Image 1 (tube, rainbow, N blue to C red):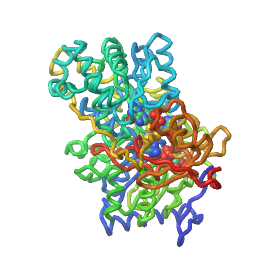
Image 2: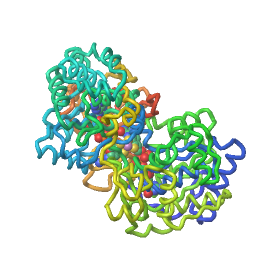
Image 3: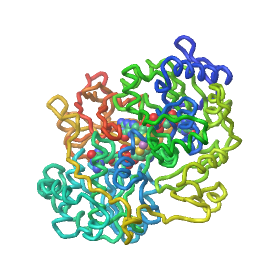
Length: 635
Ligand SMILES: Nc1nc2c(c(=O)[nH]1)N[C@H]1C(S)=C(S)[C@@H](COP(=O)(O)OP(=O)(O)OC[C@H]3O[C@@H](n4cnc5c(=O)[nH]c(N)nc54)[C@H](O)[C@@H]3O)O[C@H]1N2
Ligand SMILES: Nc1nc2c(c(=O)[nH]1)N[C@H]1C(S)=C(S)[C@@H](COP(=O)(O)OP(=O)(O)OC[C@H]3O[C@@H](n4cnc5c(=O)[nH]c(N)nc54)[C@H](O)[C@@H]3O)O[C@H]1N2
Ligand SMILES: [Mo]
């Protein structure tokens, strides 16, 4: 299936959607929201904000939730993705951004890519990694699959899914036992070392080898290489975060940087490579339930007072619900209206059969998108948006915290309109006299309120080609890396110590059993993008469609051959997909993407177990069974 661009608003009449004028669609959108707030209060409403749209749009979307409606229920796909990275980094260092610049990657001696298939999912970043390798850096890849990233590695550590903490702790223990810790850094800049050392003590390389499947010698080699390097970079993505204990996984990696002092210095750092083009910026702009723009805590009265004075609002003094909590609130009947801007949860959420029912049960669903997604098909009102990356003005923020300008190169098709203009039109119908002349006006309003963005005028962004946050004033540039304070001589300047986290290994929730004996992990391929809406499904001959990738040993044991369609079942449901052989998989492990949900909806079988801190689902570990189909249907 492939999608065509939305060019006119749609409204629901009876059971179907029909074309409508902008006036009618906006009136309907606003009336439904107003009705919800009047009858059920502001917290019965939530905004899903768009990590593909601009910073300016995300700023306006969260301001809409907080200032027009009076709720902090605003979030985005960061929840399904890197929320554990932000939570873990913020817990230890006070802010949730990746610490280094891409330029520093090229200067590194050792790079560890942990649970990250950057060759396919972050190709631009991976070019910097390849330059480092060309310069002599050693690349270590920690992934259960022999990915195309792993093929470039000096060493590939093939761990069992969900055993990352065991592996990280064994590396930590080896660093301690070999006397390779950075004692002076630990003493000056960290806390909690003793409890951490006690927790990792049980993870000898041999014990860890049994649990993780990684040979003891490789564990020792990585420990020594990482600890001895002058400039070591630890990069991770969803192989770490998309687990029921994603935040603990992230903390277990941060511990390694604290042991060795590989943070807060040029060339050494901790880098979660963010997923969507502007998911970093969406969070920075406050499109999350607990922070106002610039990562300012909603619970602080002085912060709220500043925003209330600027916005004429009364921001609620409590955190809103994040995406996962909003879905739970729908189950309880407490959240009944959603304004979903550029999100396709019906196909991206784990156990998506449940998500579809939740969306269908909403009393009012407004979807603002560039395509008529499966989620939009459930809406009461569909609003056609301009594609931010080429049809709007604004800024995006990338994984190295660099804010860059985006410029309008094309007119949006048909009646599609800029995301910000649409939100303002709804706000005006709800009694708020909102109007922005330009994206720059939004940006200037935002940076007057967010100290870490203050020095980034549009003019300066254009002149410098982009600026990393923090940037506190228009006449300065900060260092490219974060947390230099940890190395300061003066204790006052050093500030709060970075705390070791003595987290515990905890295996995946969906247990393997006789009935469900295989481990399914899901992820991405270079040729397609997320739920496939933007990469055009099967319309291009470049895409091979969905498959279930199995090891040769498993296909043999199951008596199936490449290309044969099989039934794949989990404790949630069943789907059908053709088999593909992958020599890079170990027996017992299967892999699928979620790129072709209209043909094979993998999220019907993934588990909705979520990380208690971040709310991220365990997309990376479901238990499945594979059955042959009756002969006539297996072609
Ligand atoms: N081409 C392309 N690029 C994309 C996207 C896309 O859809 N297509 N999506 C974007 C988005 S939103 C994101 S968030 C990023 C994601 O980028 P990545 O996180 O790199 O992508 P994934 O394939 O989801 O997962 C990465 C790896 O985790 C491994 N893994 C699975 N389980 C475990 C485990 O238990 N431990 C460890 N250590 N590893 C494990 C998988 O084998 C996989 O190779 O990509 C972005 N870029
Ligand atoms: N099984 C499995 N499921 C997963 C994952 C996994 O690894 N495995 N990964 C998860 C991750 S990391 C993520 S980030 C989510 C992604 O989940 P979603 O964000 O729900 O999925 P996308 O396909 O990225 O949907 C993006 C939507 O934004 C719209 N859009 C694009 N640009 C614009 C714009 O400028 N304005 C507006 N208004 N709309 C726009 C697109 O048309 C599309 O409908 O999926 C999660 N789901
Ligand atoms: Mo993502």
